[in-house]
Image 1 (cartoon, rainbow, N blue to C red):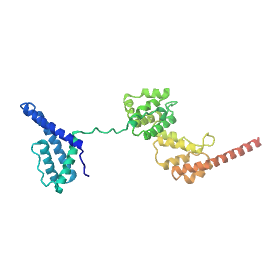
Image 2: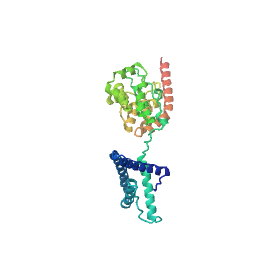
Image 3: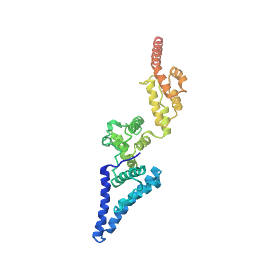
Image 4: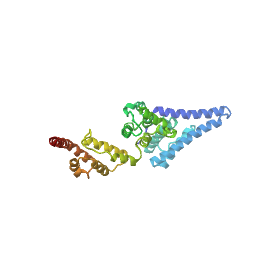
Length: 318
């Protein structure tokens, strides 16, 4: 793609050249006192242009022709008293190519002499993002064995990572303000200096430390999840049981859906409910959960009816 140099850019290059000439004249009038400085400036300009020659030769795949034309430009810039003679007639296609090449190189020299500052990777709006603790979670564990609060806190940190993926350091700095009771503050104060240093920069380290100190090992977490079962005497639905058990299994680093569904299925204590779900235990978790939600109300009604019948029989015997 052809590039054109603007009039103002050409003036900048001409100014740079004149500055070089001025140094040369100043050196001569002062008897060579600043000869070294002027020579260094001209040498720097020449090196910059020669570097552009190398780049242009690689880009345009016409290194030989471009080099000849740009060497002439160097001579014009470094030794303006000896302007280059055009190799072709002014109106020839070759002369037009020379003009375009020189204009292109002039523009690149202007860019080299006046580099633009790098653009900020973040907009002013994004740099002013404020993360409030209330947007994450108020961590209020009842004890160091409060696995449920720890699990929810971990889930909220993971959600916040997705929401503020361009502001991870700010997220890490906001997490200490999510500690809302004495148990949480005592835990934080007891952390080693190395742990405190690490959690200032990484939400993932927060997650690892919370798992370590509030939830135990993976084996312990799986054991706790295994004790999670469902029966109709509980104040929750079968679907709520599934959500709770799946969350515990995932925190215990269990990822295979087939294993998760099998463990959820085995935790269904009502025989009729478990029999109804048998055809779905070999499928995916989503299909299993959806079917359980569809039939749970009917099975709850069956359970209540059966319970009333049993109570009536017991009362009649007495």
